[in-house]
Amino acid sequence: MKKNNTMPNKTEQVDEFMEKLEYPLKKEVQLMHDAIKSANKNITEEIKWKTPSFSYNGEYLVTFNLRDNQRIHLVFHTQ
Image (cartoon, rainbow, N blue to C red; front, side, top):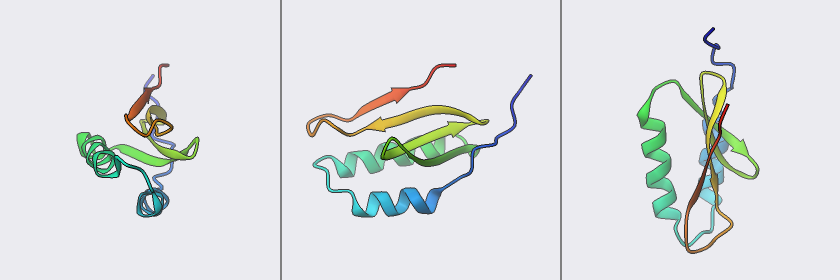
């Protein structure tokens, strides 16, 4: 049975986070963010674990991990 998208879209929260982000790869993070959001109109976003996170149909999809200053890590959630 397909879940309904129950995750709220908190784009303003993520935009604020991105505006304040001090990170050597900020430009690349923004490009990846934009690519994820544009992949499907039903993808929602929020801040989870103090970083941008994306959901699809009410389930977590991927979350940035920005602890490493030399690489961008993505955490892909599994169901």
